[in-house]
Picture 1 (cartoon, protein in one colour):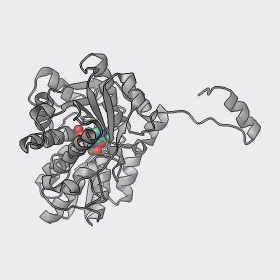
Picture 2 (cartoon, rainbow, N blue to C red):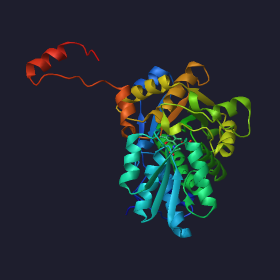
Picture 3 (cartoon, rainbow, N blue to C red):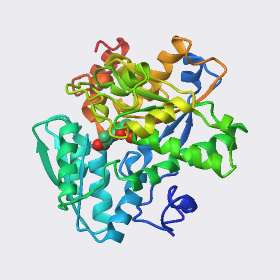
Picture 4 (tube, rainbow, N blue to C red):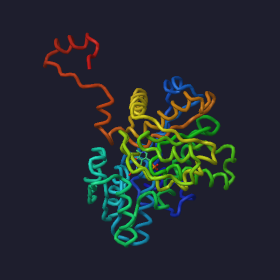
Length: 365
Ligand code: F0G
């Protein structure tokens, strides 16, 4: 049945329920990237492509649990603030569960594919004149006043579902390599995934499934224009300091106040990981590199590979390491960014001769 086909619910022993509102989610590919592995210079490199979830991002793993909880609690309006992907997932899973959804988006800063999804899945979409962090402030107010059930990653049930990313990685990597990855590199926005993976690994250690030494080093990557987690790691802060002005081409992680930082910072520190900031140019280049191996991801996702390349270059990552990079969202989420990073279409006259003439020349665009 549908629950057995879910890469989340097959791990229900680690979840608060047997079954949830499913589409179904999870079971995403763990791609080999042979050229990129050689180019970056690590012992093993895999890309866990969470863009292959039903709505095209890892958020589905959290929503399948979160919306189930909302049904249990008996609320009728689900809400989130979002840089886009959470709103797409909430709209789809809310629709699946037959519930009303409300999403607050930072006006002009959400990629087209994500708005299209929220829209067609019948979310009520409010475009706020402000950034993501301000949208989340408002949604928290609404939740506190009992006007809506909050389904951002502040909701701990979301993170329960997202733990299954770690379970799948460990299981698949072990099956292919006979060992566990030394490091997991992931993009960080609100730091929910980082917190979820850390919880996953702590539970695996506690259950005796892996040893303390087998826990992968959690390594977070942010865009230079929105890097409060990197700042906190570098300065030994217990919590992040809010950045009021944030900017990056990777709009999914355009976040200045990562609400899960208190849960995620210990995860990075205690696993021996680190955090690094990359430029928009490095993100674009990584997006092209990943696409060059046939895997299409959105800019925020490419930050993971950009961060790995940078840390390897700086000698922070060793050549003998095995690494999994998490790519969190699909290329089609942000078609505009993909078109900007990729080849330009070339106009040509409507004849075979004209086409032959043109393709004899190297591309000029
Ligand atoms: N990658 C993508 C594609 C995302 O959409 C997000 C977060 C992240 C990475 C960061 O994950 O918050 O767990 O550290 N997107 C949220 C949203 C904020 O509203 O869609 P995180």
